[in-house]
Structure formats: C-alpha cells, structure tokens
Length: 358
Image: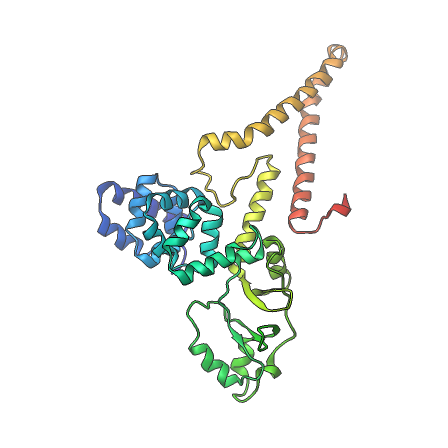
C-alpha cells in the first residue's frame, strides 16, 4: 500500500469529514480500509475530538493500532482519553513493544499504569522492560524481537529457522550470531546465507561484531551511528555484550526527523514542544506561550537600535541621505546573522561542530 500524494490526502480528509458529518460509519470504514495508516493519521490529526473518535472507531482493530502509532501528540492523547482503558489495551497489544513504550512514555505518561494493567501480561511486561530505560535513550526505542542464530548452525538450518520465525521479528536483513550466554559474536547478512552452500556453518559467514551501543545511549547518537555506518539495524548490548535488542532504521529516521525539527524550531527562536505535534492542531494559546518570551526579548533588544539612532540624530538631520542606508544595514546584518546561525545549527545537528570548536 503506497502513500498518497498531498492532494489525495486532502481529498481523504474531506471525505472523512463528510462521512462523519453524515454518520456513514460503514462507508467510512470501507473507505479507510483501503488507505495507508499514515494517511489516515494525517487526516485524523486535523479533525476535532468528536470527529477523530468517530473516524477511529470505524477502523478495524489491526488498522486502528497502526493508525494510533502514527497520530500526532494531541490526537493520540484525545483518542486514549476518549476510549475505555480495556479497548486501548487491546489496541496496544497489537503494537510492537517499542511503539507501546513511546506512546505510554511520551504521549500519555499519566495513564501508563492503567493502560499497562489493561494489556495482556506478556505484552505489558515487554513494554515495562523498555520503559525502565531513561527517556530519550536507545533502550526506549529498541525492539527485543530480532533474529538470533548460533555459530555452529548450517545455512540450511538457518533458512529452516527463519521460516518458523516469530512474525513479530520484522528486521531479518541481518542475523546476529550469539553464544550460549546470549553474547554478541558477530552478524550475518541474510544475503550471505541465501548464497551459501547448505552445509556451510554460520561461523564461516559471519562478520566481526558490528557497531553496538548501550541501552542508555542517546537516541540521536544511535541514529547517527546507523546513518554513518549504513546499517539496517543497530545492536543494543549490555556491558557483558549480551544482545538486548536492536534499533531499526525506521526508528532511527523518526529520531533524526524529530531532532532536526527541534533544531529548526530553535533556529526560529521558538521554544520547541514535541517535534511530532501537528502545526494545525496546536492550540493558539500554546503557540503564543512558546513564542512570546523570545519575541519580548527581541523587542527589547530592538530598542537598542532606537537608542543608537537617537545618538546620531544631529548627523541624520545634517545629511538626510544617511537615513536611506539604515534599512540596508539592518537587513544585511539580519541576513548575515540568519546565514551564520543556519550554518552553525545544521553543523551541530550533524555532529560536525562541538564545544571545543567554540
């Protein structure tokens, strides 16, 4: 299922609004069943609370879980608040543990315990394990579902093992060779297994232990490592090299987008909230509260310009032509500052500029 174009997403939003207004629940469910979860989430983000709930309830349970994973902060909070805990728990049971940890740890932390109690015990235990790691750490976004093999396994055995693999394991591009204690020995590309002779052991195919991070490592650092070393997944290991989980490339992209959004907001002198908040769903009062501080500071510093001009009032009276250069100097200074700040912030975002470069 491919993502829709911006025009198609706008059309979907209009159709959802119309169906909700007319109470065409069955027709709305049929319409949404053919759409990508991210497109549905984009439409739901722009609806009011009542329309959001009506559209969300028209989804099949499996699709509802995928959509809840894609909605923005305000929509997620509104939907979770409007639905009974038992229903939300059943939806969360359909999501990977790392996505559940993100929702419970960042979107609705005040309802964490109630929703964990509403989930199935095994799924709740997996989510609790990830929530035990610090916010913003690699442990919070890692998945504990990965493909692990033993060095003595033959290529044919590995392929048979993969056919019976738990569907929860989605990243099998790289297989991880572990010893009896679960310590990471190396990685094996699935391509190498497919091309190898059936009797060839994993020990002959595996590469040295890949780049790995501790669960307490910052998410942005983990994402940068995935980008730097062109990885599909980054292993997360304990101090004794036991493999705890992996951070997949799709989560790394989300982290980098969020961090870049935060940097851009700071570039505009805006106090950043959650990077995944929808611009159009952010209340006006919240937007004003975030911007008013910086605007007042800029207003006060702008009065310095008035004081400078006041000191040279006599010169301006004598040579009026000087006044024509004032907008030129102010504009040039502003443009120079904006270019410098843009370059510096981007360099900081890419890790090219550090404190020692001050």
